[in-house]
Length: 242
Image 1: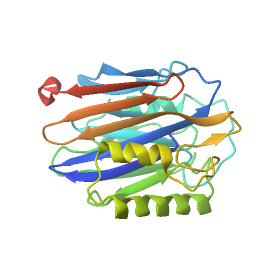
Image 2: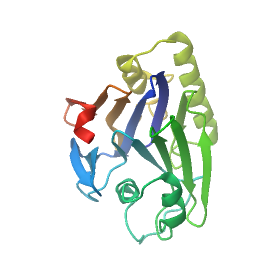
Image 3: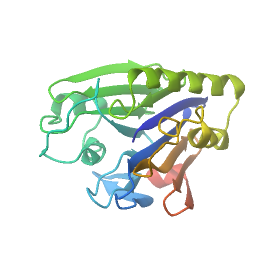
């Protein structure tokens, strides 16, 4: 939930890859599987503590949540519920507009939510909740983009990570899923505190990598559990969502 990349692939498709940076004492997540929410089949890894998730997807919507809104904040619990519930709550709504106007954001710790919508043409919405106000903007779905959590990384480090991503794309103009996963493991300059796969004194580190690969014909979820050194791949027929 702390670094996210998006790369469009054509055919209404994209690669959507997330590193989850968390405390090493946090219980390992349950690998992705299919769940039914409001009549939709959704794939997501589940946090056993909150029963929520930081990334999830179906044939229409794919979402990822990063901690923090516009800037680093001071955590002030108790909160109404975990941010891990937000993505699951989204699937109770019919579209992004309904979610923005009808969801109760108050009482939730600040977050950034990236929403990809494939219903007609590919579109991306970015929502940043500051704890008091929701900031909404549309992102160009034709261009690659990287996000980093404002709670873990300074503006300077975030800009540096954007440059690493730009350099990676320049060197890999036709990159595939494996190349992007390598970037999520090895991107950076050898500074383990701030590299794409991070490690801060073995107390806070990248615990897993999740990737959704979608187009009009394919739906693939890749999940790498770095705590248990296990990899999972799920290939789903689009007809399964009908």
